[in-house]
Image (tube, rainbow, N blue to C red; front, side, top):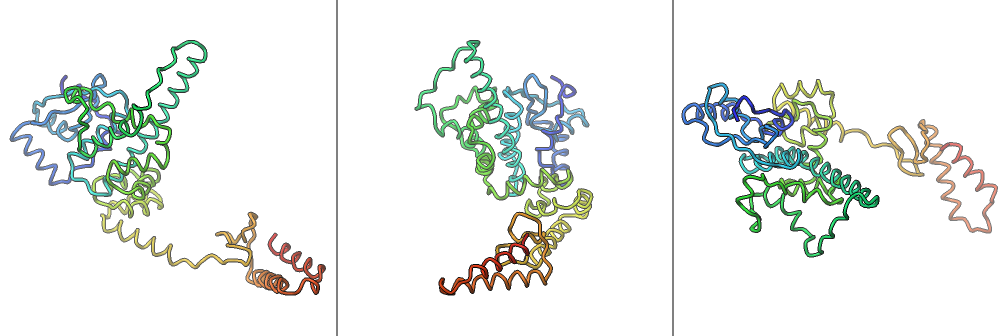
Length: 338
């Protein structure tokens, strides 16, 4: 395979934290002086580059020969997990960068679990209609956390002693996703917790990174992935229009920090929502009835007076209570609320 045959997948390339200007210059100088020592890694039969995007670009620019190593991976989810694993092992990533990668890893787990469930349903349908042999049940001893630990142990740098090292280099750690996503429990919060543990960050930071991936502009996401902006500040900034997000990114990390701090201060300084005697009012003034009702100050005062009267009646001996009086007070409250 030649360098020109390699395909650059934009989604895979986005997973690679960009180099700083100094790192980029050092890498280029090293390649020109010493050649390409580390091989490029390509997804077998797909020709998609998995590792060495910066080296690939410089080798093409300077016409430098580079060895190409192909690995076999069963799915795109496994390829994504493989890239993340090698970034964690190779790069000195900060907490925010790891949280962004963990958010992607969570998506991989959820998609993998969904696919496995769908495949199981299809197989079940075939078995019911006599078109496929029923799968052989797995012995209870083969189940448990050993399979789930396959991905996480590789990602954190420790090796499974039972793995065949020779097959590992050729098959590209195909168990990365195939085992972990096989469980239904790896959807939603469980998948987030697993991804957080694998990347050694908190689930809270991963949740913040998910917000950035959902509402953040491309520039904002790359700023966090590059280690320039923190995931907490970027998650706050992601609430702004994307044009404003890009403007802050262009202004630098300090502008992002200050804008996030100002937004958090503004939110905390807002006056509390009025609370009626019947319960907490909603943001639009609803008094907890489920129906929209905006109270004027006068109506709120009348409601408070009627509730106070109702409370007073609870202290009156039952023999002295007038049912008509109680009904009238309740009716006034209902009229004010509804």
